[in-house]
Every structure is written in C-alpha cells, then in structure tokens.
Length: 127
Image (cartoon, rainbow, N blue to C red; front, side, top):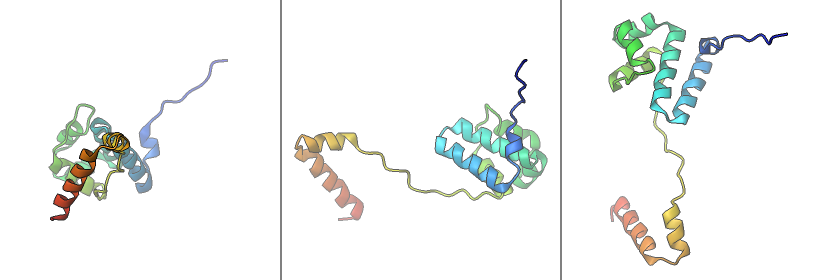
C-alpha cells in the first residue's frame, strides 16, 4: 500500500500574527538574506499581496519581484512591508562569539594581546 503524502504549504502555518513573527524570527536567526526575503514574501502572501503592496507603497508586481526567490528588496521596501505587516524590526546585540585568537594568545602568555585589548578598551571608553 503506497504511503499517502500531502504537499507542504507554509501558508497553512502562517495564519496568526504569532506564527508569522515566529517564522520571520527563525529566518533572521538563520541569518541568510535570501531566506529572510522569502520568509517576508511568504508572510506577505499569507496576509494578501495586494493589501501589503498598497500599504507598503509599492505595486503588487514590484512586491512579488522584491520578495521572490531572486529578490533583494531595498531598505525602503523592507521597512514598508514590515509596517504593512504590523511588524516592528528592532536591533539587538548578537551573541558574542569567543575570540579564539585572544584565548590562544592569553594561553601563550602573550602580553601583546592584553595590551591591545586594553588600548582598544580605553579608546572605546573615551580615555
């Protein structure tokens, strides 16, 4: 007996604002600009491209092009789409990745790394 499968459609999973935000957040976490663009397109389609385009101040065709697989939306388009979707884009510090060079230098007893770090710290603090 053959296994019955159904076609996956992301739009089935983007029915609520919470689902849309979770999807976009996952795209940003991934960090791939193409994925973020496609995710925004999926979310716009779940709301309605004509509605989103009108509220974003672009044509529907331009929105499809900007948010399609080959799209690379301008910042103004991105901000307009976010506003139309009721999404607030914010910035947060990235999780600090360990500085492997500094760790290796410190293990070797390198005074240069400590001195450089100290100098950079002074400059950042305005001393």
